[in-house]
Each structure stands twice: as C-alpha cells, then as structure tokens.
Image (cartoon, rainbow, N blue to C red; front, side, top):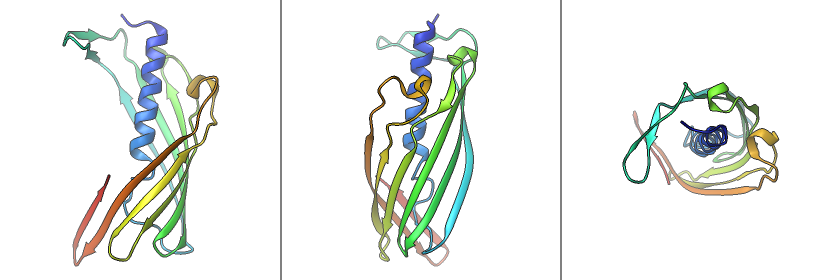
Length: 160
C-alpha cells in the first residue's frame, strides 16, 4: 500500500517524464518561416505497480491515473529556426494524489540546418501550481541534437 505522499511523488515523476519526452520533440523539423502552429494534445498514464530494488513486485492500491492536457504553440522565426511555447496541465485522480494544476511552462528554440542536422535549447520555467511543481520550483535547461532529413519519400528523423 502506497501512502498519499508516495502517490503524489509518482504523479510528479510522471509529470516530469512526460514533459521531458513529449515537449519539443514531437516533430523533429521546424515550422516554416512566419508560420504559426498550434497543437493541443493529451497524454494519459495509469499505473498498476512496480518493482523495488530487490525485484519484489510492489502493488498499488486503487487505480492511479494522470492526464496531461497540453497546449503547444510554435512559430517559425526564419527557415530552420522556430520558437515553441508549451503549457502543460496535470489532472491526477484520487488514487494518484487528487491534484490538478499548471505544470512548468516551457520555452524552446529549435534549429535544423538545410543539411538536416541541428539542435534545440529549452528551459522549463519555474512557474506552476504549487500542488504540481512544489513550494520552490526551479528552472531546468534542456539541450539536444536533432536530425531531420527527407530524401524523396523517405523521412529520416532522430534526436539525442
């Protein structure tokens, strides 16, 4: 049986993992110059248990589930360079801590050169609902490398 603080911690970890994975990496290429793209999506996560360091299965009481509705706006500054603003929200059910609110908004810059290679720099802003980001949220910097190349009808993408 997990205590409510453990369930809240799991919801927080799920939020960070989801935010790290889905934001800024949803498309490897950039938005065309002077174009605006708006994406609204959600991610749903539910847990059934896990394993401790000794390999013993740990069951979870109830059915913890967290929904992450997100708004993402992308604007092409010039060809190959865009700026992205991501506004994630968290809704956790009773078994996952019964919390909801704004998670850390993100600001990302992504560049892909005509040869198909580039990178991104992003920051998770230290803002959000206290129930989600805690008492004293901190900013987090993210950097990565991107590959986005189209050859005829073949699209080759990757990120690190």
